[in-house]
Amino acid sequence: MSELGRLSRVACATQLEDALAQSDVDARAVGEDFFSITDLVKKEPRVIRAFTDPSRSGDDKAQLVRTLLSSHLTTDASLSVLQMMVREHWSNLDSFADATEVLGILAVLSDANRASSLDRVESELFEVRHFLEGNRELRLKLSDASLGTSHERGDLATAIFGSKLSVWTMRLLRRAVGRSRRGRLLVNLRRFAEWSAVIQNRRLVTVQSAVEMSSEQVSRLRSLLEKRFNSEISLAISVVPGLVGGFTLRAQTTSIDASLSTRISDMKQALAS
Image: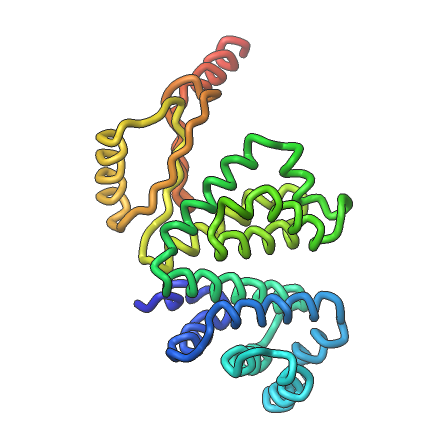
């Protein structure tokens, strides 16, 4: 299956891949187009209602897109995908805006993949996520809409992380910071990393270990997981001393908690009952 085709549940991901398959298409520019579209429809409810109006024909909405946006989009690829999007049935207005945001993110990831930098992006996303996980005050500053505009929060993220991250990761972080509701920033960063793994035909597995794992332990764990899931693995490992001992593991809907801290907690509860 092709790169974005593996994300078939994402609205119009296949159409986006077809558009990006042209060698002269700038995937990062397409991503910026879709981010701009998302910002526009969020600010202008009348526009999104017109694009998703079930009483209008698909051809009518596609022509409306061309009339309103052809001079504002930087690539014909963005226009063609958006015209296909408005022909679809949308159950609510928010789902359309969410879909354009996701397509922007996928376009950025595709550009990183073209540059053979997707492994780096995936690793950086988890490094940032792990750092923010341990810095609650900064995490709140970056994701609380009451503490500044999305642009201001994005500038704060750039000031802190900009010199350490690739251009693709920094762009994704700015979108995550600007569009994440309070408490959702870590979730969104993980989701971006999962999509990165899927594009490379891998399954993302995150491991929290009480101590740093040796290269032999990592290799053995990877081998076991690849046999368990019958898939190549993208392995993201972080050290969390608070686990006391053992580890926790998460892969999509699979979750394993073999940490000593949880065993101690369970024992205390059992003794108290």
